Image (cartoon, rainbow, N blue to C red):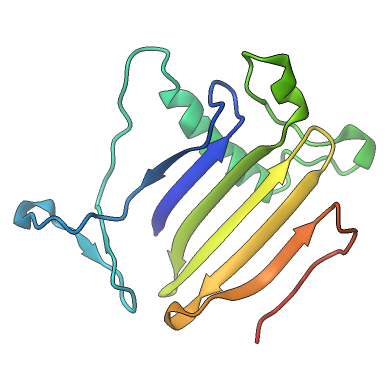
Length: 156
């Protein structure tokens, strides 16, 4: 179950933008909110992205596809010389040199997870996965290319 998705430096999205399906504290009986077992959250059953023509709605959906395709290996070359297929913010040449970042919060088997990564045209610069069983944060892995370590694992 999707809780939240965010991205920055992707197509027409320069600064970090996110969509959250976590409901506010406002009471509305007609909202038909979904309860999340083990968490004190209520989730919206649906969400909408709206705005003017050419305001980035489709690019935001494409950022979700970018996350999915990168996780499945479609955007990351098997040969290191080919790099990562990404589309940084188009309206400034300096953004081609800055990382694209995507992250997502979701529920799987009643556990809250936070996953994300930052990449440039060459490599995945940073990647992380946190789990929150019983509302206790666990770092499942955190990899940072600048640190030179393959992975930091902590599943205690």
